[in-house]
Image 1: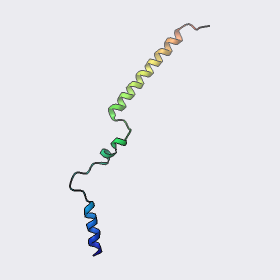
Image 2: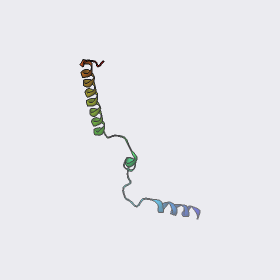
Image 3: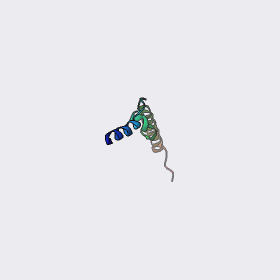
Image 4: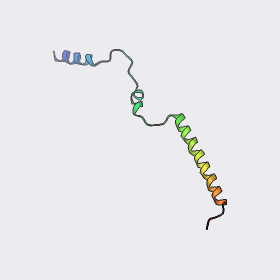
Length: 67
């Protein structure tokens, strides 16, 4: 009699036939990693900023020094 009761309890917890979500879909709201396009955009922004800073340093080196 005990096995019948245990199986009945498990049957109630089974999904109703709907598709289960993948773990990545469920956790996406908590995931802070960048997508591929976001990574490329961030890298591009950093490269542009580095070039701008190098140009500014080059301009400062050519300027006369204040006394």
